[in-house]
Amino acid sequence: MRWSLTQLKKFNQESIAVNEKVQFGEITDRKDVTSIEETSVEGEIHVRNRQISVDLMIDTVVNMLDSRTSEDIEVPLHIESKEIFDEEAGEDDELAENVHPVTHTLDLETVVRELIVVNIPFVITKSDEALTGGKEWSVMTEEELTQEEEDVDPRLAKLKSLLDDSENKEE
Image (cartoon, rainbow, N blue to C red):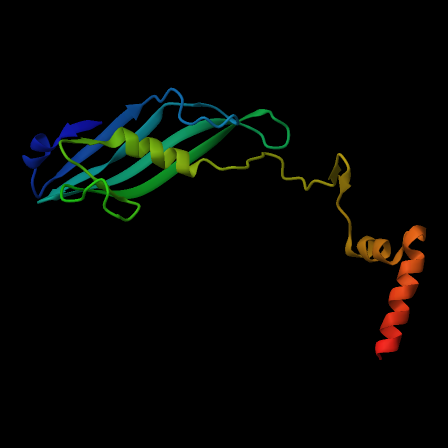
């Protein structure tokens, strides 16, 4: 998925179809991402004067650890993006997130890799059940919460009576 700008200039004002399969080794250093399957990249490259726009559709499956159970699960990703490569843009220029400077070659692999990493979910689980508790915590209803707030620790009961007294004096 790499083209020289001189190759692309031959197709000025035309479109070039992209239909590639890419196998990434490691895509990210996150511990919950175990692997990534073969990635399908489709789209069109539109060459216009000093800018090259690329419409991308990326389909892949990321194997991740379930956030709750640590089981291996498959997370399908479908990403659509329009990326612009600008010959006049410099590396230090402040550009929009989908605009990239380009000098001699157009390399889509780095852009595809970046789009996949950005779209990998941080937390994923295949369980739809709501958690009811865990180690040293539990889910409470509002009634249970108000009851717990009303129950005063006997060691702090005297402090509560002092607080009540000060509130009565202010009124």
